[in-house]
Picture 1 (tube, one colour):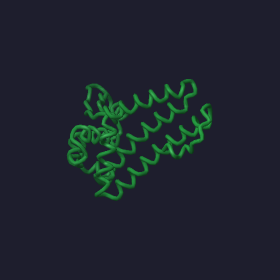
Picture 2 (cartoon, helix red, strand yellow):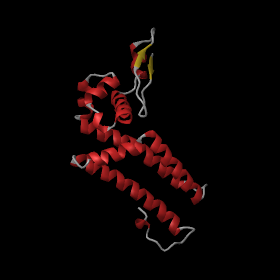
Picture 3 (cartoon, one colour):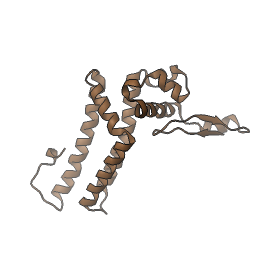
Length: 178
């Protein structure tokens, strides 16, 4: 069997345990693309976007450099895939929290603040800001960062629309919130 230490939040290696069949080992493997993204995230958090190279990611992931180009085509493609993966998970988390009807607006606000603090600790906010800055020199990165920021603004506007038109009945356009 393979012992896997890779996830989107951290990288690790694959370690073969004796006595397992090839089929069992293959079934237990982390998909290579996920392994590469985990390594990229590790480097991004540890060293920053400027130090993230395809060679460094390949070394961290323990894969051949050509696999990075096979899965992501370029450093830029890798950065965009990493940002998309990180963001999709967090937007879903936030959307689920805002959709809850069993907690008050104040509790949602407190949970949103806790989420933000978690996002600061995880490096997501740093990553997003570094990529936004990198977007000044790279149009494709800038476009994708703008899409992500729009997704967050839209989510906040949706949450505000539900709250403002519900119990509070506040005469404020929810789009002004996002």
